[in-house]
Image (tube, rainbow, N blue to C red; front, side, top):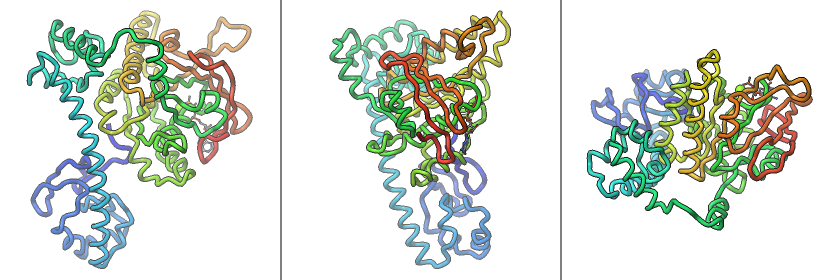
Length: 417
Ligand code: GTP
Ligand code: MG
């Protein structure tokens, strides 16, 4: 899984922010993003300046991602720019350590479970079970399979985690309290937001299905931008995770949509964690891995575009139908479980339609994936084309929304009314 904008060091190797890498210039370990005094001299050397002036190698050995810094030729200016950069980095590091604290607290809670020694803890963390929630909400068979722990240990761990989290029968008042915390992300269209009860809600799996070019991918792009907005503007001040199964993610569109809202497109791109799924197994694996990323990267929305494309092309013929449906079902439950663990997380998936040959009256198009997908997603929205840029959305299944329709447009600036 890589950032929307891949970070490379001077040798062309990928490296992660805040992870040390070995610098071949001054022969010691560096932290990505930090500027070292030894490099000032290096930055001023003639050929590097030439490279910078020619606009080549902008992500050079300085580890500099900001193209603005290219033009500095005066040492005082460089120092000033470096100081500013350092301040920015320090605040990033502070945020990062806050997240780190969160993760440490979760791991600490797992460590304090009775019977969890160093070895068990390591196995659990390695398999991605680093919080009480992730243990409590996962079926025992999956924990056993992924972590290699025995049946007895697993059952005991789940039981104690559930007790600690107070999971069991509750009053409807408690559920109401919980649902009051559910947040919403604007789609960019007031009409579509109204149809959905105020935007895309977190804590649920929302499915957009429709024919080609009906705007499914466009809505997914828009949500990745909008989730980053401040709350008063309809966002969640969070980041997005995009699983692309069709190779249709376009950073250019993100830039257009970000600029339309006066956002710094570099920041917006940076806050989208992107994973390209090359087949259905890979897709399942990516979603399993996300459990560890959600807290660490402050992910508030997960996009899967599209949910079952790979499954449709890989499982061919009647004989494979049962296995296919079971695999899709378990994949969807991985997504639903994430929503249960993190109520402030929304999951949005797209789905294709297939034609039902035996329907003579009414709409012969049905969402692909059959009942498994229909029962798995919490809210289902059917999209169809209207005039020109217009698209029509219809809520076809939601536990708390009336069936209705909304008209929205896809423009150069993104989704609007
Ligand atoms: P499939 O993935 O093929 O099933 O389709 P989809 O539903 O994901 O369609 P998508 O979201 O890719 O929508 C494509 C449509 O969005 C195009 O036909 C255009 O009408 C519209 N669109 C995409 N980019 C732009 C843009 O920059 N400007 C405008 N005005 N429209 C755009
Ligand atoms: Mg698409």
